[in-house]
Structure formats: C-alpha cells, structure tokens
Length: 126
Figure 1 (spheres, rainbow, N blue to C red):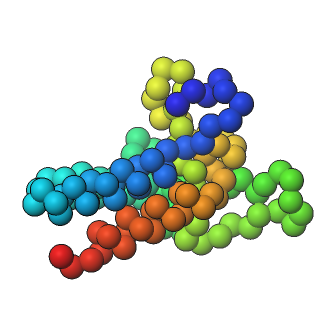
Figure 2: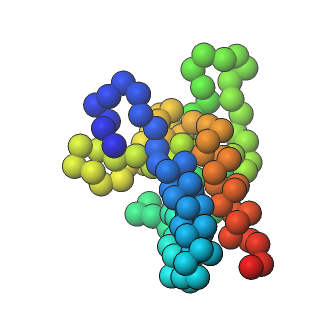
C-alpha cells in the first residue's frame, strides 16, 4: 500500500482472489489447511479485522463510511450487498478504515466479483 500515490485502492480484490487461488490449490494438493486460509480471506472482508468492520454493505458491523461519489448525479446510493474497495494502510503499514474516501469506501466491480466468486467456491460441497 502506498498512500502517498494519487491512485490506490483497498485490498478486497487481492484478498478474495487469493482466497480463490488457495481453494484451487487446496483441491489440487488435497490440503484442508489451504481451504482454512481461503476462509480467512473472506473472514477479513466480512469483519474479522482490526476494526471489526464488514466491507459488505448490510452484512456485519462497523462498515467504513459511505462514499457517495464525486462525479455522477444522482450520487451513488447505499447498496446492500455491495463490496467496498477495502481497508487500506498508511506509511507504517497498519490498516486504516478511512473517512469515506473512495480508496476504501467506493464500490468497485473487481471487489464484488472476486468476493462473490470466493463465497460461491466456499459454499460448494466438495
């Protein structure tokens, strides 16, 4: 995370896509521990993180502040089920929850897609 840059986003797509990779590796290697690590990626997104902050709107508690958008009118509504960009970090690398800034609180398709994919994979009976 390099917060001094003009453009950066939270880590939810990284977490969820890593979880998918861990699940696939778990299947190939027949390693249940990797599946447990995949679940931990989703757990972080849902709120098992230093802020007890769910990054899925309407699920869990302590959601980061809503980012209503800055260029479109009407502004973006609160969308239940949407996945936020995710927690970020500062220069010393501890996680930050932000204050409704787009880097953390904006809805973005990769975060939604990978999180839904991870949820679907974890839900399959294999």
